[in-house]
Length: 336
Image (cartoon, rainbow, N blue to C red; front, side, top):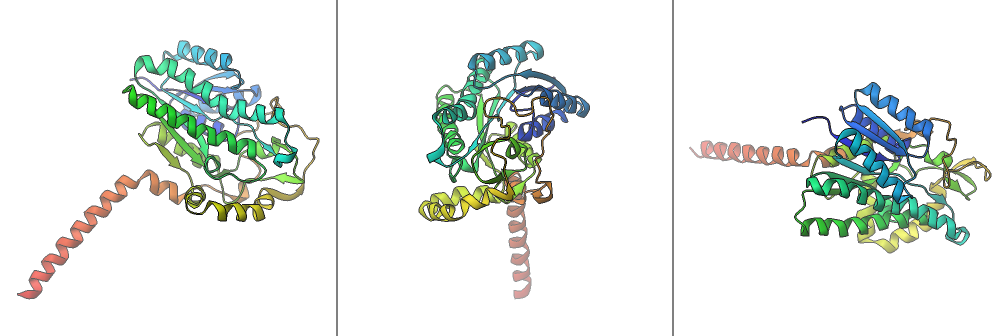
């Protein structure tokens, strides 16, 4: 078999950029969808340098026709689509009382409907072949919302609901197309430098913060394994499980701490450019990392254990059997 063909939305920067490079260094043919042309070009160069092939296609994922056209272009170029990763997103940091209807509409169109359109485009090419994997980039915020990001949290919740419906339909149709959601922790990406914001200080990811490559490794793994959902980072596990056990307690905790934890001590400029309606600094390549490298973790023990749990359970089982045999033999020897 030849190299796999992978489509990544939001591939010009941040997590999408890291995901694209993760596949590129493994020899994949990576189709890059995003609005920022300079970032797309930078991502394409990284993939080619890493040993993969790249096809950048400037695309706004809120435009269903554009997404389907990009999928058709990818299939014509590489012959097929094996993996589709829905990652593109926009957000607004603002209290609900100050949000504007058009901002909710835009955040929903990109972050949620972009996933719907991407999934439909992927299915149109995967279902006839009866194979393929669709990976939705989720978030801990898909289960546990926080203040100041109601538009983003609502969209991530919607992605889970949509994907669960799709998964049931694929099972009903006995399809071999797989769908998985990878839920991310706080990541050190450039989005906090260009996100639209009404808060007093500069936005930041809620600690603990991880480098985007940690999330990219999880996405690559999910694309090649049959796992319904993957949680990245102990903080993600804690938020999701904690919300199931004590949602009211978390409401009160986040009401007290959620505003401060999402802001640095540095005042923000309310008139700075943002990427809600158009790429911020479209002529600049922002790369995968944001400005929090000195605080970001490059490894997640929780993720490593989760992705290797079958091997770990096997090793634990073999160890238990060996221990039982050892003590059984010693017990018999002691009774002689």
